[in-house]
Image 1 (spheres, rainbow, N blue to C red):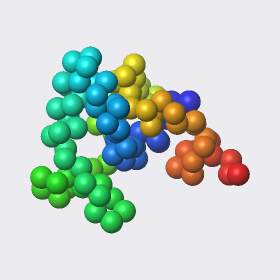
Image 2: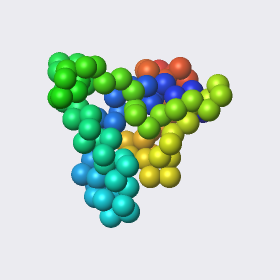
Image 3: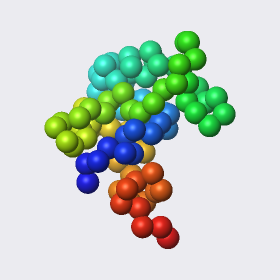
Image 4: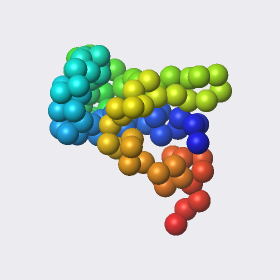
Length: 98
């Protein structure tokens, strides 16, 4: 499933220290730069930029490939993304409930 709905949420806010260490060790300064540039902080129920307060929406590494969503860092995506099971949450259109 490549609808991208999960990538349109603020999942990037859940990057772990393990993810950051992996990206540092593998020289993925491109990823680290974007994370540092955004300086996301929680403001109630939404993620905003600490720099200027604008609402951060969606993963900065998500793009569209025609009608399908694509991850530009798929091979080294954060653990939260690797562990996500499509259809396991209400924001997924394939969610069946429990």
